[in-house]
Amino acid sequence: MRVITGTARGRRLKELSGRETRPTTDRVKEGLFNIIQFDIEGRRVLDLFAGTGQLGIEALSRGASEAVFVDCRKDAAKLVEENLRLTELHGRARVVCGDALSYLSSVREKFDIVFLDPPYGTGLLEQAMERTMGFDILRGHGIIICESAADAPLQEAVPPYTLHRTYRYGKIRLALYRREGGEER
Image 1 (cartoon, rainbow, N blue to C red):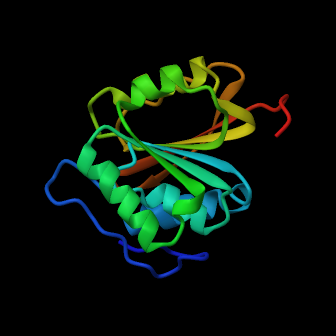
Image 2 (image 1 turned 180 degrees about the horizontal axis):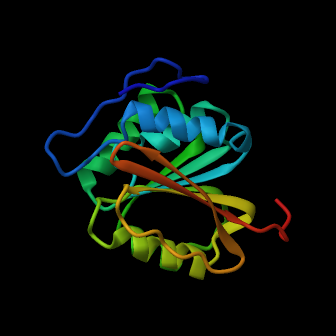
């Protein structure tokens, strides 16, 4: 697993051992960042269910202004911090070791991009989407990117959010939701 491009291009990221964490494949990650490549520069990113932190780190490497990483596992949070130091991006990042759903319920800041990649089939994606839209933590024109199994039901969007588009990569689906404008950056 490596950073694809940007200031940390080519740097290898450390991975967690075991099967509790399922890193996004290079093919899916490359597709995801091709989709949002013009939406990253200067933006605030939330990497929920961070795992190794690879999605938020890729965004930082490509010019995101800052990123918050949230994972409930202590070993994952520690690994994200280590990967941020390896890529020299730790100065623009904050790591939260805690429950993702609790974090969404208490967050008082706004983001431009939210990555949601929880363990498949646990119901966490649906709950995280519901809270993300319900607490309205995105700025105007913000993006939520959800990774799920391709055959999983799509989460219904509630205004001011809309399902913009879906992309399929074999057994994996990316769903891109956008928030309508109306708030200054």
